[in-house]
Image: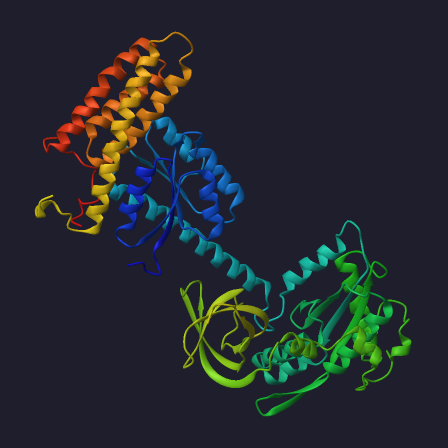
Length: 420
Length: 129
């Protein structure tokens, strides 16, 4: 009987009797599913048709050679499976060649030992699985490091690196930076404590994430500041317009336990290359604009010439929305709604996320659910992997999902086709 | 076939069928070895003949062991080694003409039930299945 965890093994041998024998012997226990190939072309077709856990290749294939075939596999098959060499010759020289060519193991045909062969295959598969899970672990850690634990947005290091990339481009192109700070964060921390300050920052970051365009980069810059990088439609008018909109949308009241806290953002913008050509100069220019605006009681300031005076840089935030603005900067909330094929229904069910083939299990709340996807909320922030399995408690089987977006503890996922 | 010779499991049946194929193919290849040995006595370039002897010997050495014909593995390996080490046509012919009847004898003995059985270590059937 074939089990879900059976090893998918491709065997290449030009001797049909030996091929049949090996397939019968290894497939007999039911824990290996064998795909036979009698030449390199057949093997490559099999590897392209579906994932294999391991490949068993005869060294001497008449017109072909196991070493060359292994090289072709590694050159043409992404994430190539480990390859175990079978050889009739059995010379030490061949064994050395095999290991130098990256074969996982080497088994002699002439005094074939089933246990030895099975051990070699299992060991190769196990080593590969371990390497893969280490890679996934490293990717998760790397991804986690990209995000700020408090805000759920990109972390300061990531944003500094992106800014460095923007300024370091060989063919410099215009881009804008917007520096956003909470004017009264220090006071709030002093009076309500750091935990309350972090919660406030988290709420502010969520609102900021919604207010910025999905195609732009936005993340933490330091303890109380955010950086927004704009590299599309860059001119003084659009950046000023963007600052005005941010000032409107980020002026809000937040309930912290029994206190209602008024958040007032301080915003400063600068443009490259006009206001600076390196990260330090640009941030300084934006900071200076921010300080000047704050000192003058203005909602935002720009380092570049105020070509956008008409959009109301010196006026108070205006709740009205111009048609022009709708064309230039569509609201992210609307955009996310358009991305969704169907309306989701609020369900508030318990869910379980199975990461890394079930090695890690995380409970979540399924807040919205539709035929196409779901909105999940986790209790503790972590960077969701690109893909994982989701079980909505009480609604059947696990389904494979793809992470479409993440904002802090909220994760939007899409069900993958064929995962029902 | 007497009831005691009926294979107990489909695995044994599969192995029995494979062994049957092996024997048939090996006897055909033995005829071919004898023909090639005769060719070695002819004048002219023998590279293709030697290569073909090497190919047959290599394949026989590889597959004979799995059906408990360890003697054939050893003799075929020796023949292959003669080809790979560029022994003279006369030497190769002599060995080929010696090995061919040995192959027939070993197979005949096995069919008669008096062959020396040294199957593959831990091969199919040796695990109790």
